[in-house]
Length: 237
Image (tube, rainbow, N blue to C red):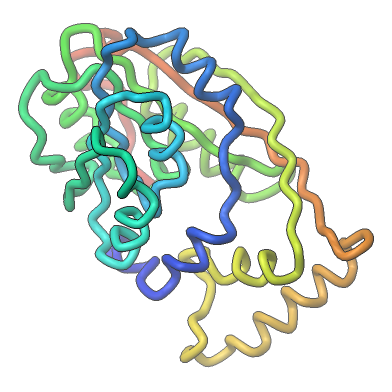
């Protein structure tokens, strides 16, 4: 199951994955009401959920993987308005017409988009908004993942880009290069070669012991009233 691909990688994910700029949440706040209730789908270790919660919103953070959810609980324990739910994007278990804002950060490409759209229509209020957020490195694989999934899910999204340069120490870089679904675990064959390759990349690209990636945070948003019959979505990748 895809939800098991991050088992054993949650700690590396939590400590190394890029955060999101405050400007993203400033922008989202212009789209939603001050008393909005959020559902953050595929919350992972809570990197984006924490950004929402820090603004005082009521948030349901959905994460089906127990390893990731353990880090999610650590990240959000100081936010009393957050409820963690062990559920998937396609079957959230949330009540009908209960959510104002449905977000997913670095996650939509994992979803069955037809089933996810139906679930969004079920849990979303009459004028609910769906938002997909991706940290992408120009020229990297993340660009294709974000565009394919978001443009397949949304009909006519509003798209905003926000600069989000990320600096990696060697330690953070090695954790980052161990946090992806396709990265081997220490117990896997090929792990030593993978880490050697990651070290070589750092040696080649760092300046003064710091490797910088010019990440851009892309935000797709659309009110769910567009295509409320659920048509138009494609299967996830």
